[in-house]
Image (tube, rainbow, N blue to C red; front, side):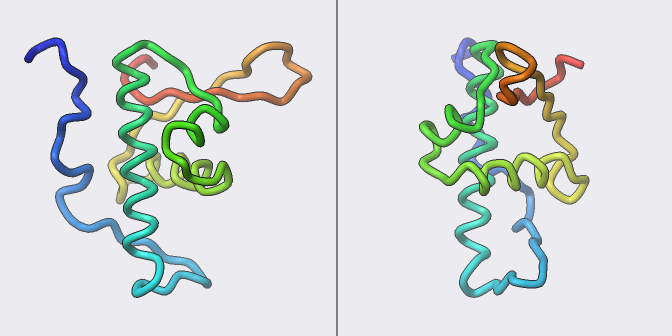
Length: 108
């Protein structure tokens, strides 16, 4: 159906994402981090289709992942090896409250 969001894609990546870092252990972390990235990507893709911006808390509600992990996945999604996605952010509410919201897409 043409009106459905593009989230129906079977896989986020053509190949398995490659994570790294001093505490990264593939046997424990690969599946978990790939799943987190997929959930964050899909939540942002649906929000983009609905023309919504989402805070880390709202992404947590949709993905059930910790906010710190979501923030890390947002940074990863911007990287070339993870697709060079456009992740925009803006303040929500009063500038002094420190609340940010995010969206993914071609709205630049």
